[in-house]
Amino acid sequence: MPFSNDELDFTYPLPAYFKDQPSCYIYIYNGKVVTDPVNVPDSPTILHDGIKDVETKGIVQYIGALGEKLCYAIGLESHNEIPEEMQLVFLRDLIGQIDERMLALAGRAIQLIEFELTSKFCGRCGTLNETLEDRGKKCPKCDLLIYPRISPAIIVLVMKGDEVLLARSSHFRSDMYSIIAGFVEPGETLEHAVKREVMEEVGLKIKNIRYFASQPWPFPNSLMIGFIADYEEGEICVDGNEIIDAEWFRREELPNFPGKTSISGHLIDWFVKMADKK
Ligand SMILES: [Zn+2]
Image 1: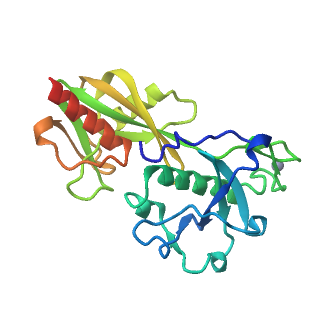
Image 2: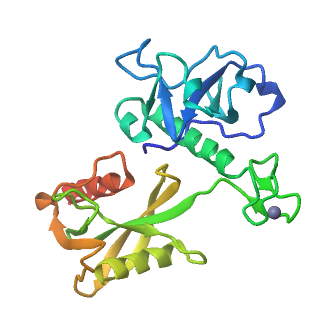
Image 3: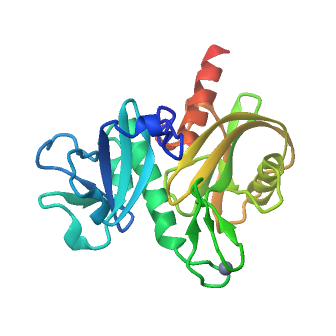
């Protein structure tokens, strides 16, 4: 699944026996990735090695080990610090340009640097935070404790016999349909969020909710948790604002839907393959 760092060793803090391993660095500036289009023009390089005086180059965060290589993110503090001949690229623009391990690493790097930049001071009393060993930040005055923010969101493929429910969001380009998704509320279970979002967006009751897979979605910090569910009762009713159309589609008449960069594309692909097997 794109943006999943499944091959990355997250062990943190870094074990002592690890510390002599070779290191490599991803530069991040202003939420974007610094790539090297000059040395390898066909495929942007985001991991750089042989960097000297790393500790003088802004915010440095260990992001994990990829094989024998220790990967660090360097959050640059000004545009002038971007190494000559390199360029700034949006993470979205690297999709399909670099391999999925690198894409996932860049997504994690951006989020860890963003957390450093936005957690320097306590959000409750403004005191300078202390950094804990487990990536947490703690206020020495009021004890407020925070961690890198992750926003869980559910996404669900709803089926009725051999049809699938697809909806068109007002944010999509005109011919694009996808499945239902939404953020989980405080105090809510994932299953409740799945039922609530389907009811809110299309007015349907669903049943048999089962887990499919999850995907980190670093725009800016979501974790998508994917489910499959069956229609129970109700007629499709959209609000006309957020969702402008929703319909049941058979496999052979599917409209345009998202590609396999996102878990929605994987879920719809699963539906197509399952229908193939029948
Ligand atoms: Zn405080």
